[in-house]
Length: 317
Image 1: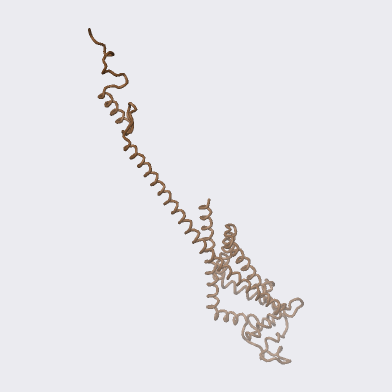
Image 2 (image 1 turned 90 degrees about the vertical axis):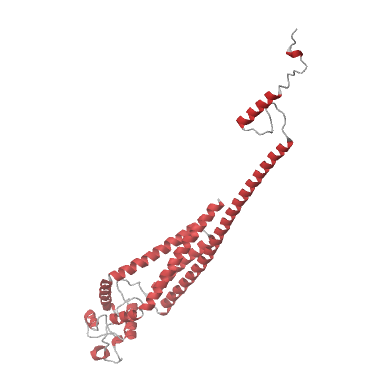
């Protein structure tokens, strides 16, 4: 009688043949790439293999931590370099604007001193009666003081709005100066012709009521430069309808010098003043170039600091 497979003591339902289990284990591992840490039948792998896998995971974590630390150090280094550049530009710009502000205070002081000591000493021009030496110094000094104060405040507070305001105001002043220079050299002849006509028309106001400043100005110019009239001494005779000239036209003061042409200065005042300015044009040119260079440095420093502040704010965000 044939014996059933269930009666065979070597048969076990829970443990399939070794060949079949090995075959399924190989198929499972080959298809899904699973390591030998587990098998299809749930049999535990070698403890040494588990320890090796855990070591690899730890190594990956350590490498990731080192990479993050390196990136963090790079960012911190960039931030420190940014702050260092910002501090350097901040100090330089503050010193520059402090000198700028002090210069404005000095110019304003000179204007106030001229206004107090010279009294009503005014301009020679009747077209621009407020254009006196004292008013020019006071207005220029005030503008320089305001611009320098805005620059100092912007450098100390690192406020972008103040820095941008300082840049825009200084740029407008710089462009106006450049445009004025270009127009002056382009229309040089027209400027001299207009100035001579304007000064000549102002002679009719000499020693009239309310024009003490103009009278004092003409007396000082003719005495210092030893000249008479704008183009000639005849300008006084023509504009005043008189045969007398001011006493400042006399070489030697006497009772009859104002009516004696032989005692008058013969040189025109406009040409003498023009020659005096031409002889000092190098000093004037150097002073003007220095002013332009200072303004250019102010524009550069303000824009650099603005960019550095903007960059630092982005880093902190």
